[in-house]
Length: 309
Length: 309
Image 1: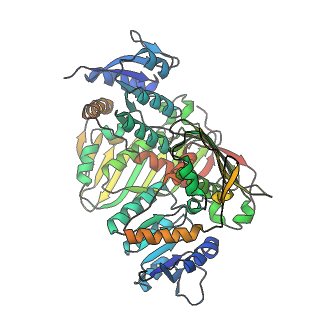
Image 2: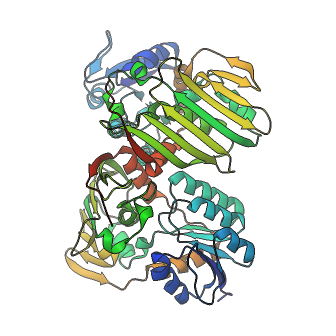
Image 3: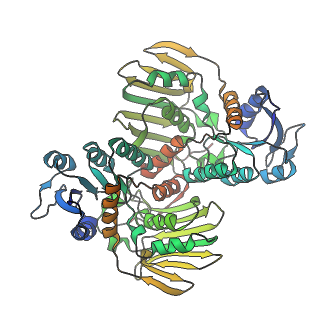
């Protein structure tokens, strides 16, 4: 094992506290060395108001992990890359596809690692589903991704603002799994976005996509589901019927349970970040964000009742 | 000169009649051999109701040019590519970025040419502007693209529907020039889209973009301009000041007129299509459509008064 890489964490919201901090404790390749957060800090760690202050005061940082909202992420990531740091991006990797393409070129020019993460791709059953589908002919795909926004995103204003993605914030997790497990690329044919009249971002969306070989992919994202929560991807093929449940944690093949495992998504992300750094590689797959941008581009918008947290 | 390539034209609307037909008469590399149009035909030419009928009845076609609205273009282009035809796409090349990426992969697999055209890039002064800016440091860019939609798009319902782009239909011409002449890539920071309350697509848009080196690019697209029409791109640099007017037909350098030439955009497009076919190449640059998709993704929408043609 080489010496642990000192890492600076930017943003100390829900995802940082629930996922990034415990995962960093478990991954020996990194040592959490500093925090940048406007209004929070951690005992025993140097804390800075923003990333520029952190980069100036902590020249020994080897890597930076960004957990801030996507709006404004570009400037932070660019500052870290220009300072020669390896950078890991929480999903979505930015507020636009073209800004992340610009970041990727910058990382290449700087000779550092950029890792645009899709945590749901690290769910326990995703790689097995991909292997099962590798040689299959896809007949149809059905995605149901329905959860209660008040439970999962209480008080998060940025998700409702322009650039905040709305229900595509969880929906992009489904799209990140879809684009990982299918053997063919997909693109949207049509989309219906339901937008609360006091918000910029949709609270529900229905997408009709198609694989490049013509198989239909229907996706329903809804943030108004109380009671049981649903994160299912159902793939019918000429061979096995593949069902991923609970966001990719469980796999059923032809109706029989095959995989059910605990969540290690963020531990795997940080382990992968360390591997990319060691190999001098970048990993920036923009397909999930591209599908969301395309859904916004061609989608029909329907006003729906106002949302109040 | 080799034998002229028999070409099938799909879509017989304004742009086909005003631009494609006269240009095809002037470009000896192609021979217009058939038309596919739901409700129009041309004297002396075989006419078909749709592209599938045309492809079935005219096996000798070497190339297909699509002038239909972007919604539904994918299926037409895919049919032509699968039939082994070289394909030229009117702008915008599709209803989404990912569908054109899928088309490009299909063209590659088929070993045929796919040409996603941007006619404004063929305006007389664009290449000279590009040459002037090649070594320059960009300080700021200002785009004003303001025209009267009732004059240029009378009765065109599809431009107001989902996937129709609205004011980005002309605005994407400015973005196609911008991404051709600037030495650095750009991405949007923010966008304001004004959408008539009875439409899906914006009638006006203001974009704040940035080059990867940090120079600001401000763009105003407006479809409500009566009187003089404006299609200007103004680039301030550490060297020459470059002003493109009239959609790239006129060039002013440091205030002095340098180029003013007649419109040969579509003749140049068809000549370039022939070159690409001869060289066995594809030309699919999606940067302009990517910027529009990103503007829809992160843009703030503001309702404005209803539009009636």
